[in-house]
Image (cartoon, rainbow, N blue to C red; front, side, top):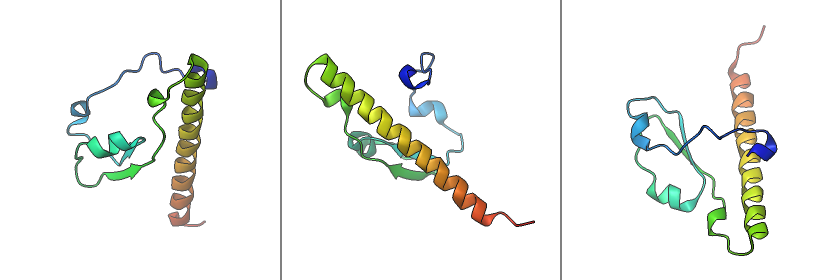
Length: 98
């Protein structure tokens, strides 16, 4: 992630329990295992699934595995950007004009 200017060094995996009681608009899963094992979130949460290859399951040399992680990272990055672009465009359609 640092290669593309995103610092996640202070981040950690979190239990879904840490979000108990919070309003969550979107729940996005990015691999089939996560989708199949995703806990139930409160009503009002939109569940979205983006099926990406699990780079941790890729076998091969270290360079091949690293290439897989980079490829999937870049695919997720593009999908996130498109997701927000679409949400902004949809919200703009509903804003009253001048």
